[in-house]
Length: 294
Ligand SMILES: NC(=O)c1ccc[n+]([C@@H]2O[C@H](COP(=O)([O-])OP(=O)(O)OC[C@H]3O[C@@H](n4cnc5c(N)ncnc54)[C@H](OP(=O)(O)O)[C@@H]3O)[C@@H](O)[C@H]2O)c1
Image (cartoon, rainbow, N blue to C red; front, side, top):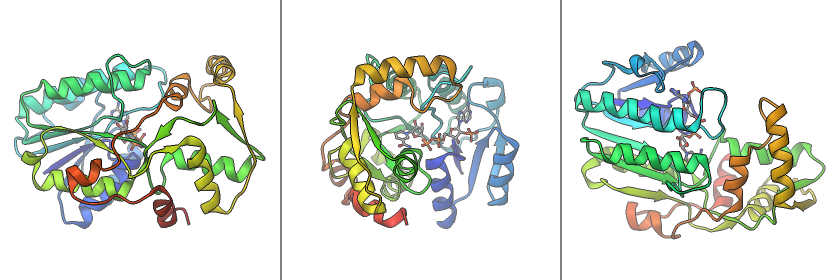
């Protein structure tokens, strides 16, 4: 059985549909009534639980399970801190996986995960990776760059800006480099891991075939949508001060300080990473947009 934690998210939703279409049997973790119902309607076995609450995970895994851990947050809210969800949550799930003696443990980290990173997101992803690697279960870790596809939050934010804002702000100079990967290419990679997990016992960067600046990502989206808008740079220092003020007063600010840190630095890997490790050519950002934005 394949067990998925994070099945209701952007990546998890695509993975569930993909695996069901291939005839796999799935067991998914869910924590809200709405998610439990919608997953059950798809024919998935659902277990109710929250990875930050160890007691809800007790006994949910079996020795022949393959665990796919996709739970993650990009923004801290209340008790859902990076530490609680990424580090403590992963520790809880690894502990249950060890107790059950599962076949394999897949963890979705993030490109640039680093214990010394200034970003709480990247720092805690690295700490979670360590917990998976130190377990006594065979494991695979993916470190994806931005994953784009239908319903992804990043593309949607920029598309909304292009639709509704008269001008497009670019944090800093918009010069930092990214390497977006299309969700269907991510699915092709995990399909290979599921077919032969013993061949993929390592950490893999999951990246597209191009290094793109934030500015060129916005320009490509604008071209594909046929929505031309003027853009202007906002100095990063000014963005940081404004954001830290907004964070104090708004429950859900448009951008967080941690996300600004992620926009400030290059987040890339070699352009042939996927072809070398998974044996196929991932599609470009504009080709991916043409497949899904219309
Ligand atoms: N999307 C990207 O571009 C990208 C890039 C690199 C890495 N990643 C990583 O890939 C993973 C999936 O990303 P995504 O874009 O699909 O994220 P997402 O849409 O925000 O989904 C996150 C999932 O985690 C679940 N979750 C959050 N806290 C939980 C908790 N305490 N217990 C159980 N489930 C919990 C959510 O469930 P609810 O529905 O109940 O909230 C949801 O199913 C994350 O680990 C993310 O860091 C994503």
